[in-house]
Image (tube, helix red, strand yellow):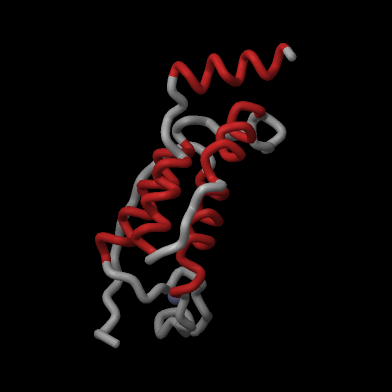
Length: 124
Ligand SMILES: [Zn+2]
């Protein structure tokens, strides 16, 4: 393994706590154990990934959070439940980059057609 680097990337946005969990989920397969020399504790945010991939995952989650996928109770909105059902099922497998591309597609801003489709389903 290459020598690890600390990569700082900061972005403000809604749902920061949930976002962090989502990022951790995407990167969980690359998590490494790291006992911090500074505070002698284990930090969970330590991953063996390259910086562009890390930033891509952070942006994927932060872009999605900006679409406000959660309601006031902290649950996915009906629209997003529907969009995820519609979009998430077709992953054919592949590399981590393929998986990220897949989720970038799932987390895309709803199109006019998606909205019409959702409104139709709501009424029926
Ligand atoms: Zn520390």
